[in-house]
Image (cartoon, rainbow, N blue to C red; front, side, top):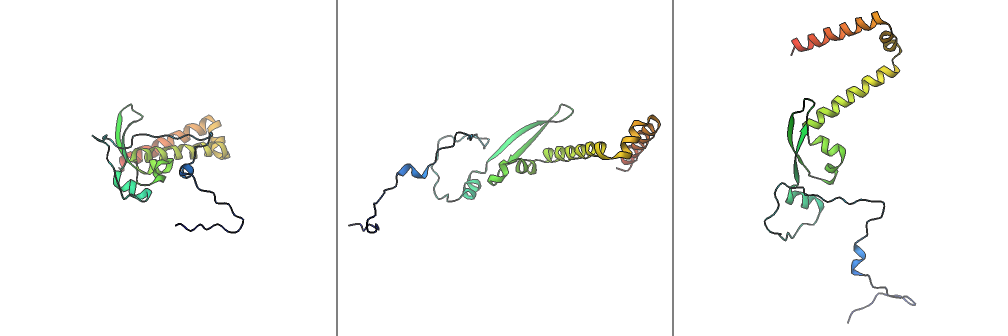
Amino acid sequence: MAINSVGIGGTEVRGDANEALNDIPQNRTLIAGKLTPNAPVKPEVVEGLRTVDDVFEHFEPELKIPFEDKNGGTVNETIRFNTLGDFGKKGIISSSSFLKELEIESDQYRNIIKQLKTNKILKAALEDAEAKKSLVDTIDALIEEIKTNK
């Protein structure tokens, strides 16, 4: 005989088995995708996986992704997912050397744009034709020096 832990005047409310599963709110999107290159031949039952880390360690999800470089060529990379954080922008970028290089380049362009908007001396130099030519010649000389010192 089971002992109920209901106090005086209390009403026992039994939990529903579906109570543990929450519906996805209407303003959310659930995306499910294949995260391993090979589909299983037949479904397998995996027991003993207690945490999300256990699931990642067992299934080792990864995707082979072809990226297109600025010359139109293809760069193939494999993105591996070890934690839930790896699915975000920072996680994906940190898994890919190609995307890391693109992010560095993007940051450099942002810095140049910021300088062009805020640096008054640079703005004045770009507005004066003679100063602009001198600046471009200096930059070209610096590029040549970098190329020869590689």
